[in-house]
Amino acid sequence: MGGVRTAGDLVLRMQLAKKMKITEAKEYVAAKLGVTLEELHDVVTMTELREDRGLGLAHVEPCAEENNGIAAKFRIAKALDIEINSVERFKERAGM
Amino acid sequence: MDEKKYFTRMGDGSIVYMTETEIRADIEEGVADAVLRGKIDPITEEEKEHLYKIVTAPGSIVGVEPGKQVVLTNDSGAYKINVKSQIPIPKEMETLIYERCLGCDSVDVGNTDYNYKTAKGVAKREASALKQALNVTTMPLFYGAMTNLGFYTKPDGPVDNWAVLLPDGKIKEAMAAQEEAVEHAVRDVVFVAEQMYDVGADGFQLDTSGAAGDADFLAALRACEEITKKFPGMGVEIGMAGEFVLGMHGRLKYDGKRLAGLYPHDQVKLAEKAGASIFGAVVNTNCNKSFPWNIARVCTFIKACTNVAKIPVHANVGMGVCGVPMVEMMPSDMISRADKALVEIGKIDGF
Image 1: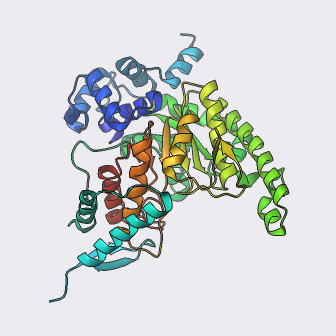
Image 2: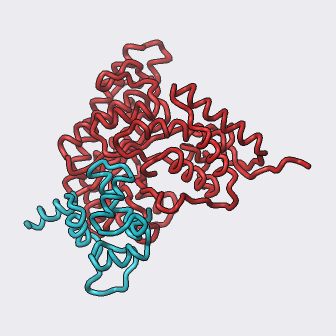
Image 3: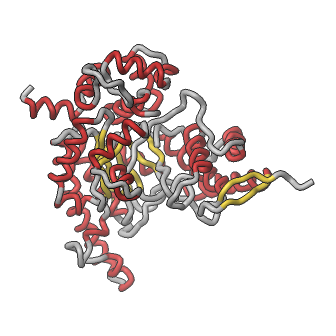
């Protein structure tokens, strides 16, 4: 699906976390993000959305607000209403 | 005038030109072979027609209809760049290239000697590399390796080699050796899984399951069951070695079902019972048959699998499986046709 260029990483997270098949996983992510299925596959729409919401990008203009890696995954867990193992372990190690 | 011939390939990747009549005949034969072996339903006439159009579509690369894109998981991902392509970078850096440059949906970090017996000895070091990668990447990361039961045989491993015992007629000894190897393998896989869970792995890949036969598949199923119970926050993907579980033991069962001889539509039900999040289905490529023959056979098997699956099915589209020719350097013409057919006819959830 293009990973962080669109929403492929998010759809895959739903397959892993909830064993959702592809259509259900896409519909779930689209509903949580408030986009249509067409927009979910669209690199332009999703880049803007991911930048606004700090969900991680493939390509950024360097700035303090740039969000990738663990910071983005904190926001993804909240946006999708799921637990992400690396986020949970990070909290544990950080004493959060 | 001669009948028009279309560019396609054989299962070994060599170029071949076929007429419409020849392509349609091979599609029929491929479907019939899957129906006979798997005792499954054929794909429909409409699907055969769609497959013919995919095989003969103009253009080097073809694509799925908009909105039908699927997600990608993989195996041995984090050594494709530094080992296979000889670009000397650490594997935790490879994950960033997969994410930011290649647009992958996930990747797995694994040892270059891609099996759990080897990974066990360096598991904490492997976990450390995974942890570094998890801190800087956004997409899901797996840890992956093969169960690879053959590695547990003497002289490198602790148990007698059943491939040596069987030709000598030592059937009981060969069966006992495989049963013992399963215990070793499950213990190793679960130990590695714990290290990876502790650093935050999103997923755990049990790759090429069944490579050494039914005992190998049993080890993967039992390890999956244990991992998903102990570490529910880490999904498990079971990827298969071949379309058919070889009966090297012959009597092993999981949840009352004999493993030897199972095809993908039966394998996936056991993966579900073991708690897997994703099932990686495999159908072998026959090098002596054409791409139309192979992909028709693949679509028939895979559709039967996705029809009964309650978990996502990711078709393996590497070298020599699921319609992909048996070559090291992949021809994008056949890869893209195989992908399109698997999505639009096989109804897969990912690759």
